Image (cartoon, rainbow, N blue to C red; front, side, top):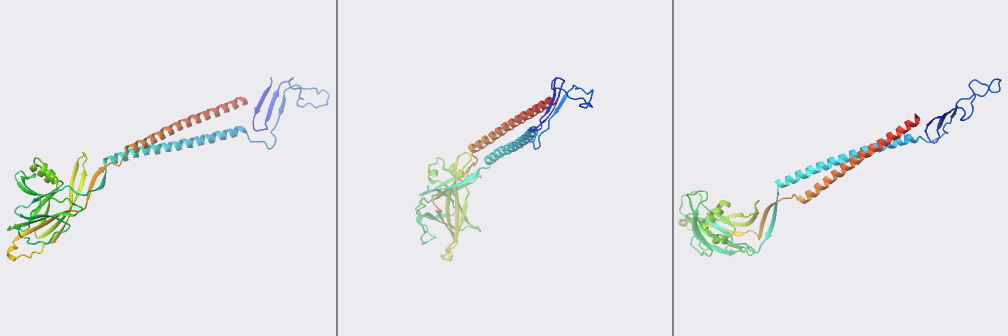
Length: 358
């Protein structure tokens, strides 16, 4: 029965084979000399040894081991890269959700302007107290020179007088003079009012006023007293002093509340000019008040809070991030399976080589 041992080491290889007597012939015994008497043929196993040729190629098994190692290394690197991508995608998802919640909690103020040809006539509520209305006139662009400022002059304005209870003190009755304001902003329409206050032992004197958006709404209100209480509660009041001409330039701001309601608010710029009193000294005890109301420009400012977070963009970004997470996890799973398969194949080949040797 032949016994053989083969170990591959390259294209050339050595083979040591032991074969029993009678299979491959005879070999001389050790110590027998050919040609001497008594030296006969010696039977026994014959050993055949072959060596690789010089310059043979490297062993294929070492090549296979090197390739397997490189493949394992690259697989580990790919898994690490995809784990890093998964971490980045997870951070991106977290950051997107955080930014969306932050934008929901803090909306951004949006300001736009709407040009109009004319305004609705605003309401001007004046609280003259003891002062008397001398004149109320509509002019365009300029105020004509005063002829006799201390005398009662023409009153060609639409006015209403109303008494109502102070909304901040139920025991106080207030008297207001409601004047229809200017409309023609392009023609620079203005309303000029003049008051006089005689006597009075006060150190300072002024007349209060407030503005509301629509004089027509006041006329159409079934309860004008309650209407004025609501206007006074929601609006700020201003003053103009005696001995000066106060020029009020109005602008309208429309604000959208959180509940969807529209609120109108007046903003104003005032300039004060000293009145040169040329009356006789005896008449200067009567203090004069001058005030002019005019629109500043034909633009209504619209202010509203807008949410810059777009839910569709957020959803699309989250879908992309989750898809990247899913693909990265799937690739990592396949890479691990492939590494296990390569490892099993390598172990199988190693076991086969060991079996050949044994």
